[in-house]
Image 1 (cartoon, rainbow, N blue to C red):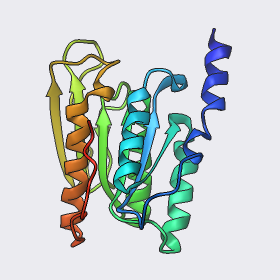
Image 2 (image 1 turned 135 degrees about the horizontal axis):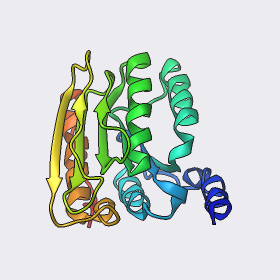
Image 3 (image 1 turned 90 degrees about the horizontal axis):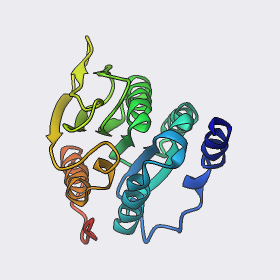
Length: 203
C-alpha cells in the first residue's frame, strides 16, 4: 500500500507542467501544492484550472516538489521572470510544505506576496518571508488549528476557522476559492498593478 502511494506521489510530480497556454500576459504566478500522494487534494487541481482560465500562471505539484519549485522560482526571480503577485497555496501536507516554500522564497528574494494554507497538519508556525498569510482550518477533525508567527515575521497573518468542511473537503470549497481570487486581487492592488479587465470567477 505504501509503495503504491509513493509511486503515485512520484508519478504526479510533473503534472503541473502540462497546462494549456495562458490567454495573455500572466496576472501573477501561483504555485499550488497537493497533499499526500496527489489523492486527497483535488481541490488544488480545480483551483489551478480556474486561476489559469482567469489569466494567472498557475501550476499544481505534489508537496514533495517544494524544494525544486523554490529553487526554480528563485532562479527565475534573479532573472526578473517571476510575474507578481507571487503566491503559494497548499492543502494538508501541501500546506505544510507551502509554508516552507514561501519562507524560502520570501527570505531569499522578498517576492512571496501571498501564502494561502488549507488545513496544515504538521507545521503550526510561519517563518519570516511571506507578506500576507491566510490560513483556513476546519473545526471538525484533529488537524484543524490556527497558525502562529515565528520571531522575525513582519507580514500579516490571518486565521479563518471553517465550520462547514472537514480536512478532505476544505480544499474544494468554492467559497474559499472565490476568496483566493479576492486575495490575489488585493495583492495586485498593494503592488500598484491594475485590476484585471476580465476575470472568470471561481465557481
